[in-house]
Image 1 (cartoon, rainbow, N blue to C red):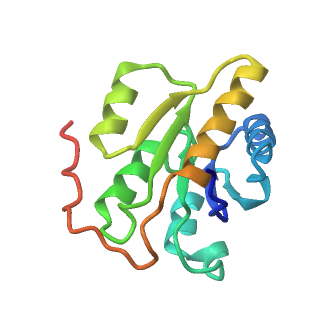
Image 2 (image 1 turned 90 degrees about the vertical axis):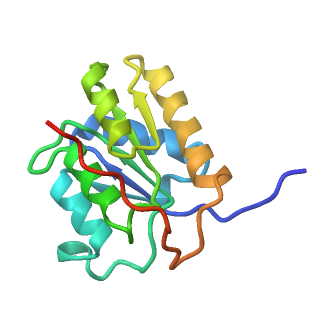
Image 3 (image 1 turned 180 degrees about the vertical axis):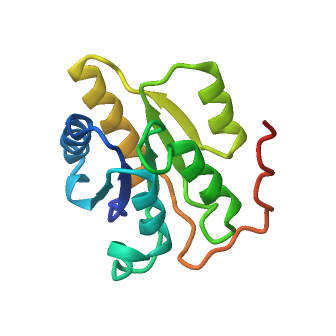
Length: 162
């Protein structure tokens, strides 16, 4: 028995236009392509989440998931993740790091900062599209998001020690 559910918004923080195009194509396989807001750097991602600047008039509520590249200009993905998971009003948002980095320090830092998943972008077109489609289907359709206004009683993770 399947249940129909209205998909929620997805925030894609990605600076590579080709990866944006492929990601949107993959998400459209599950009718999620029109439910994606795209930002091209970490500063814009934070503006989106805090509803400031160009995003101050966006509708209230959080995205159902943030797909976050690590290597972005202005503010990198790890700093975005750090700020999101430190803020009690944002920390409940699932953040999936979607990056080309296989470096152990990036994987470790992402989980230490509270990332919900770490996915390395496949190199081949078909694998990339399939991977993103599966991510979108899970986080955008299957995962049950907390109700609007929910605030976690769990304290934010402590910062990484350098």
